[in-house]
Length: 538
Image (cartoon, rainbow, N blue to C red; front, side, top):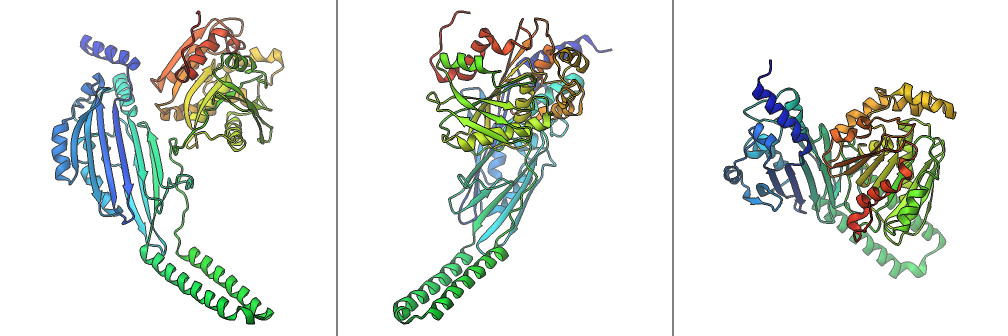
C-alpha cells in the first residue's frame, strides 16, 4: 500500500504538470576561424523548480566555475531577469580535434549531470587539396534513465513527470565562421547563409546531429594561385605577341588547349574535393535564421473540405485588417501543387491549401502539404522563414504531423487545431456518422484517423519530439448532432507541451471553424502581438 505521504507527493507532482516549462537551458556557440581553431562558448542555466528539488538537481555554480577554470575555460556565473541562474564558459581550441576533450570535461560539473555519460562526440578530419573536411557526429538523448543524477530515483507517475521536465530542456547549438568556411548541417549546404547554422532542440530523444565544416587548405590555394598566375601570364604573352599571326588552325589548337584545362581542372576537383554525402536527417527542426518580409498562415481543411472551408475566417480577418487573403494552393491527386499569390499589405497572408483528394492517407496529405508550402514559397516574391498553421478536423492532424517531421526549412511559430483527432477517433462512430453523407468509410483517411491505427501510433511516437517553442491553441467541439471528436483527443497536445491553450465550444464539428467567437480567439492568438489590441465585446 502507498503511504499517505507518498500519495501526497504524487498528487502534488501531478498538479505540477500545469506548471512545467523549459527550466533547463543549454547552449553551445562555436566560432570557427580560418586558422582552424575554434572558440566555444557554453552556457548552462536552470530555474528553480519543485521537480528539480525532487531530483536533487541543486547546481553548485560557483564550484562549477572552479572546475571549468581547471579545464582551461574562462568562466563566470550569471542570473537573468526571468529567474535563471547558471554558468557561462569560453575556451579556444587549437583545432577541431582538440574539441573531443569535451567528452572528458562533461564528466565534471553541471555537464556531468545534464549530459548523459554515453553521449557520442566523434570528430574526423579528411585532408583535401583545397579544403580540409571536418565531420562532427554527436547525439543528444535526454531522459531520466540516462542522466547522471544522484539521490532520489523516481518511479511511476512521478518518474514520468520528471522525465517530462528533463525533456523540456531548451538546447541550442550555433556555429559561425568567416565566409571562406562552409558549414553544412549534415543534409545540405544553405548557400544563402552557409557560414552560419543553428539547431534548436528541446530535450528530445535520440537527436542524431552531423556537422561538416570545409576549411580552406592554404597550401592547395597557394599552388592553385601560382598555377593560375603562370597560366594567365602565358596566355597574355601569347595574345600580345602572336595574336596578329594566328591562323585558323592555331585558333583551333588554343580552343582545344582551353578545353583540356577545363577537363583537367574538373578532374582535379573530383579527385581532391571531399565527399559531401549527407548523414541521416536530424530528428528536430533545422532552420537557418533568415530575414522574413512576411509571415504566412497556411489553412488546411479536413474531410469534406473544399476551397470554401476557410472563406468565412479569411473574410473576418481581412475585415478586421489583421491579415490578408494571400491566395491559395491546389494539390492534385498526383501531388502536384499549383499556387496563386495575392499581395499582403499587412505582411500576414492567409493561404488556403486545397487537396483534390480529401480522403487520402495521412502520409499522402503530409507530402502534399510540404509540396504546397514549397510551391507557395517559390511563387511568393516576399521572403519568409516563419510560418503559422491552422487546421480543421484532419487538417489539424496534418499540421501537427508537419510540425514534428524530421526536417523542414521553416520555423513553425504557432499552430491552431479545430476539433482535430490528434489522438485518433472512434472508427466505428466516425464511419457510421459519415456513411449517410456518401463518404467511403473505408477510405485511407478514415483508416488512418482510427484510434490505434498504425498512422496514429506513429504520430503519437513523434509527438514526443514536439518543439517547445511552438505555441498551440486547440479548440474542441462538444455540441450539436455531430460530436465526433472527444475533447481528450482534440486536446492531446497537452501531454507534450506546456505552451498550449485549449477551449471548447458548444458547436458541432462542422461549424466550429465558422463561428465569430472562435474567429476572435484565433485572431488574438495569431496576430495580437503584431497590432494594437482590438476592443471587442465578448
